[in-house]
Amino acid sequence: MDLLWEGGAPAEPPLRRATGLDREQIVRAAVHIADSEGLDAVTMRRVAQELRTGAMSLYRHVPDKDALVTMMIETVLGDAMNEQPPQPTGWRESLRALAESVWELSRRHRWYPEASIAYPPLTPNGVAGLEYALSIFDPYDIDIMTRMQFVGSVHHLALHAALDRIIEEDAQQRLGVSNQDAFQHAAPIMKMLAESGQYPHVTEFLTAVSQLEVDQDQWQLAGVDLILDGIEARLAGLREPDSGGPHQGT
Image (cartoon, rainbow, N blue to C red; front, side, top):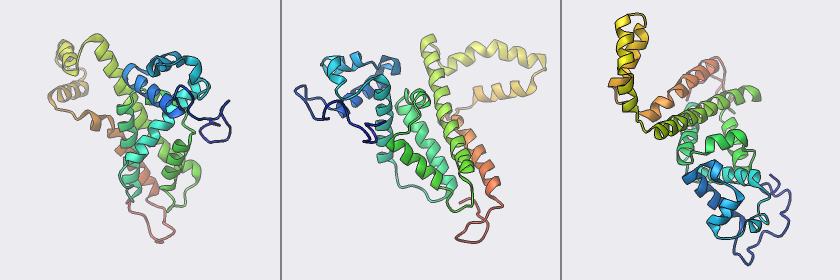
């Protein structure tokens, strides 16, 4: 954290040495390893191998793996922020965009959900993103804890939806099955449930899902709209200081 916030200094000046290494190279190499092999594969020794140097040369720039993972989070957050289109103006559109950006970041870097839960990103980019998200509700007379509940609920759902998807995909890869295979294997059970007549709603749902071409991204993020509907209901009776009238959810 001291290194990221420039509140401290590494053991030696962060200049390129005879090895030609710098901190960004190290972090980028670690991100590449995590993207291709998973977060557990990221070790100081493995990163050194990727960079074709000795592990001890890394410690001049990064004190340990915990610091390295935190820097990885900061780096991918910065990349995502630089790629974002202009921010929408309405609170609902802004929170929806937040959920989608968390989802896309997690799909691009499958290690990110686990890492960000284990290492809460109190980094410059992480704090800047949170500051923006909390400011979405500036037009309303809402206390900071309520703002955090609104923002946190959307962020939590998107992050954990991505984590659920990753766990499911990893399991399917390990077992060598697809969604279609899973439905085929479940067909006898679905038939048994239908014939029993005891589970009409479950049977109806399983039948519908097996017959539809479901957009997995939209399905995973469906709960975001439910949360936004709840926030809109909470905001319905509030007045915007600038307009003096009730806010209509835009």
